[in-house]
Amino acid sequence: MTSASIRSGAGALGLPAADVDSVVSGVLAADAVIMGLPFDAGVTGVPGQRHGPEIFRKLSPGHDWSVDDDGALGGLIDPLTGDPVLAGRRVFDLGDLGAVPIDPRVGRAAYYRALTVLTERLTGTGTVPLFVGGDHSLSAPVATGLASVHGPVSVVCFDAHCDFSARPMPGVTDITHGDFLGHLLQTGVVTGCELYGVRAYLPASCGPLPPSLRCAYAYGFPEPADHVDDDPTYLSIDLDVIDPAEFPATGHPEAGGYRLRELLAAVEHLCRTRRVVAVDIVEALQDDRENRATSATISALVMTCLRALLDDHQGRGRDR
Image 1: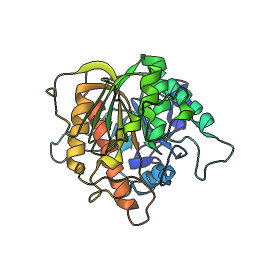
Image 2: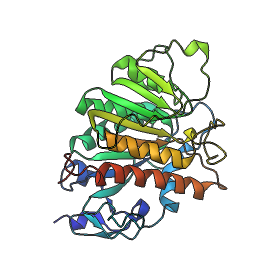
Image 3: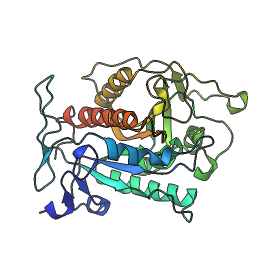
Image 4: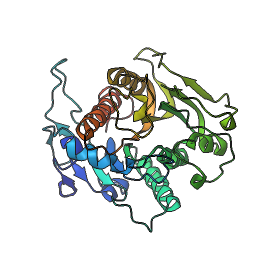
């Protein structure tokens, strides 16, 4: 039925690849999709984040999935629990929005506009998009696209930086990767934001911080894993939340961050206890010495999100 549009093993993590049009048109049903955003025009400092999707795909582990004609996965077992991994789920790699090098004719406004529309169309199909960036400014058009379907969403962000400014920024092209949350709060796209891992100071000119922006270092595991908050939540993971001693390949490292194991545990718990409608993983930096470790880190986060969202959401509206 849909086998012609599925390319088994051609995606990141050995997942099947598919064309984005087959998903947004409804021809191919998907529980979750992965898409790269090779764009870093929102960076104010060190660029290179546009290579994040390429690094992830080239060096991610090639898991040996079996895939049936409808794209349902099988073939993996978790040796620690004996449980199947994503069995019967439909997860596709849809490629990248754009390419490297970036076409100079594609400006920030055009890229952000295309990403907003793409997010809206993917979300409208009921799939969970997982975006690999790219710089953190890309979270603004993604959140805008989500809000057009779900209404204002809650943002949970793991980040070493607050990424907020109170300066007026009515348009998405007014933002940078360091202040996009100010735009989202000003435009009413989000109901509020929880930030974890924050440890960098803000200039006084960025304030005052609104009460809807709550910053903490540690994620507190506030609910038991069997409790689910049904409000739509957008999960954003800036890789600079990880201690640079463990993950140096990011543009603005801050000492004293999360260990990867701590981050994986927090992300897994959050995906189990919130209604996560989209995920992004951003701010990986091109570094030939660190590319393999960068891909391994992104791969671990992607698999953690997918398993927590899909394997642990039985009976919660994600079965097809």
